[in-house]
Length: 211
Ligand SMILES: [Zn+2]
Ligand SMILES: [Zn+2]
Image (cartoon, rainbow, N blue to C red; front, top):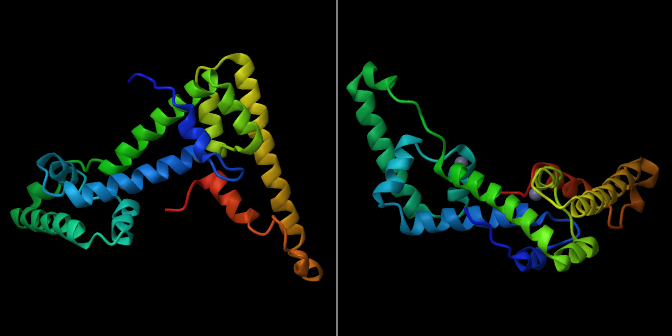
């Protein structure tokens, strides 16, 4: 796939405590699932992929429920249940038949994640504007920082990303330490500054966005 440099896409979503790659991926998965459930539930290719994976994985199935897509989810799971019962009635030779493929939404999430990592690295190499904006108000989660660092980067730009990315995570650790120190009974009334939600920001920086 050709790499497109679109640094503005990342600059727009930079935040001091939020990884732009996690944020954009999260957005993509939500939108993809929403459009699939609204427009593609009767599309033969989508149906076949969902037959082969026996529906969505637990995480994406419940995301569909959370989105309130009762019609789309109902149609998909009705056909899965019917098919499952047919196979069950057909006896043991069908029960052990095919391997279950992985969830189609997980697959497209994985592909999008990789292409975004490559595009971010590409944009980082090209755009002074992105690098400056990141120094002022950017961070990457630990996983994305490591993955972008593994991409092809100009050595001085790599060093720049390493240093600024590390600094952003160190700031978070400082806030988290402050939060934990104030958990002591005598100091609990002092928890009022930016350290209040440091434990949630740390979860986001290590485990990604909330579904
Ligand atoms: Zn991330
Ligand atoms: Zn999935």
